[in-house]
Image 1 (spheres, rainbow, N blue to C red):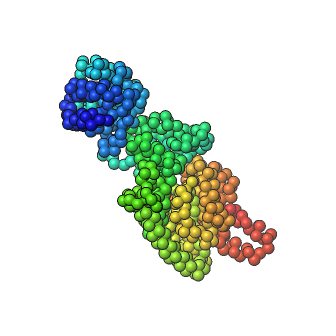
Image 2: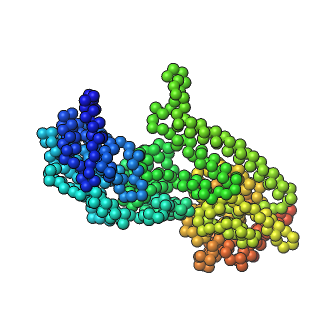
Image 3: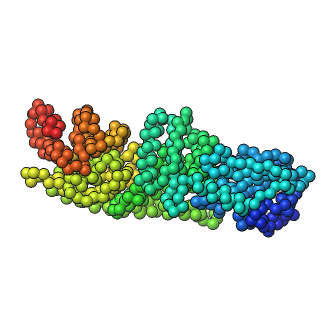
Length: 549
């Protein structure tokens, strides 16, 4: 563009629009005249104070709206900006204009058509409150006859929108829409969505909507179709959501592509679990392991806008200002990961020493394992009369706890509560907690605790078995224990326990723990004695603890 035109465009910034006007006639004549002269559309963005924040020159068919990160949406229904642009011919607002209005949450969007270099007609659109029959309203008028008390109109519109949104201005918690998109069967998606909702609640997130879509194939860029994604984002904006949580793990490129479509925060299932772990970890071991997992997860997702951000090339052309912020952040994360790995080795050595002392005493070790929220900490408290923190939510406790449990005849064991398992446990978290989970290798018996009241308990059993297989301890002696029998009918409990050859208890009812204690005692001491007996004798004793139940 010529200097004269650039100067003429810069002069637009000096103008001010009164609060009660959408745009003044003088400003409209000025931009339509420039647009007619250069044969390109011109757009301006105005804030509620009447100041012009952006002047945009497009082409004959449209304009490209820049990033508006300096004007975030916040907790209000609208952004506080209006977008006005010219149309070289008398054309109404198109689908792209309405999409921009919905996604970018403009107060209003307007197009002024041009005839002989002057304003002709004006087309104005604004969003309607959630729950209205129409999602938006379009007004059409001769430009010089268009009248609107802009400031008062927008104030009343936003007040009405806020009344229909799922938001309490005093509640600062995140508000999320959960999204599950996969090629798996619908019933599996629904079950996984139920679990994702429990995870979200455990992370103190308010769930305001759920979206399930079964796909024929995964979209490599957005995981689901671009149109469906925009529909979800618009729905999130209407309902006041601040966060999108995907049930499926997103690749770094998918997170970037989805984030470019919306200003909402976007996380996946793994990141949600990592957030819960970060909230629940209290011991030094737990904090180090969680931070290490978070940094490993974050590193491949820490990227700039294109390869131009990289400044670490060698040779000719590689000399310049040195590291930019992106590379500095990456280097700091790698350094931090190295330090945490060294600290984790020191903590692991301390655990090995404590473990060695337990082994030397010859006291049997029993580890409680199971799906998260199966009642492991509650059982530990009931058996040992201790006060480990318990709460009816996923991953309420992460830090391992060991207590002594005394049996009759001067026998005692060390019973250990471990971190809960979950389907599709993030690999970075699995790696970070591997040192802690390795303690299961030294257990003489694993108590596999299962929540019998959960309709997905069979899948949960399989998930735990898969994790044990990954840890190479699937063949470790195990005792299957069904918990929370107080929430299920007696006949159902008896049938399920018989089918799985398991013990059934309620950790909140101490009187139900007798069969479990006898089963533990039999599996540890009676089985040791049986090693010297004949195979026939051992076979007769195999189901002792079940008969005694």
